[in-house]
Image (cartoon, rainbow, N blue to C red):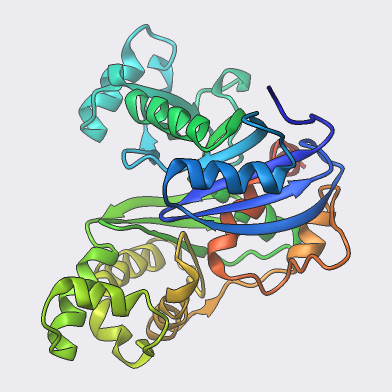
Amino acid sequence: MFGSKSKGLFFDLAGDTALLARTTGMTAPFTIEELREVPIGEPAEVAEAVRTFAGVRGNGYASSCCGVYPNGRLAARLAIEGRKLRDEGYLAQHVTETLKIDAATHVLVPVTISDGSDLASLKTPPKEILMCGAPSAELVAHQNRLLEYGLFPERLEIGTIATIGGLMGQLRMVDNKSPLLLLEIGTESTSVFVLTRDGVDITRSVAFGISSMIPLVQKELALKDEESARKLFFSNSFDFTGMGPQLTKRLLRELQASIGFYEVQTGQSINQLCCTLLPSKVGWLQRTLADVLGMTVHAVDTAAWLKSMGIEAAAGVQLNDLPPVWTSLMCLMGDYKGLANEAAA
């Protein structure tokens, strides 16, 4: 019923594309044997592609580590009253009131903002935490969807959390002390984070996503309807680079306000940008945002970073210069428990 556990499979479900990595194991040290990008279509078609890639016979399931992105996912920095942290019901009520969600309908995990450690391991309660989680119903829906795709998730992670851990690990590997602006540009909204090697400094959400750009494309190019604009936007047959600042004007205004506030408060300049979840065909968006904001695109020697965690690539597997959409899958492979040790050093 299940595929061989001598192999590993990492699966990142980002929008309308699934990213897969077949490895020699699920826990480092291991070797990445092959990478594959699979369009999301009918579940049976996705399942056939997954099983073929993973080497699973018949209608079996591929044991896997899966990264998903529920619409209601949380990775929110939250001020708390540390002395009340262990009071029954305090955190759930505080989350409900502050984040405007029903804590009872969510799976929530509070961790430290510096390294993602469990709060129970701390001797002194913190003043701020990173609240991670998602609506329970959405997580169940993702689990069911993964089963339809022929996957048995031994580990199910919110991809955003893995990405934050991975990028912080990259900054620490090269001792990069500069803040990093991380954007998860989705269909309807954009999640905004400012990360440093020492923790998560800013978390917020902006009600602007890819869908907000489509009417602007239609207007600027005088197309007959939004569907035509959408098809052109994702076709890779038109260079939108010159139009980029106009398409992202609203998002840029929100980002510039957050960046300005951060830089005044901390005295640090944000000079590097990383955009994840972007389809390969709209990779120009990251370059456009970086240019307008006066930043450089975050670059790291992915092969060297993974190797530092005991992960290597087989001959023919190119890890460097991958499109931005692959960032989250690479981060899903790492184990960032060592961040706590580095922070304490």
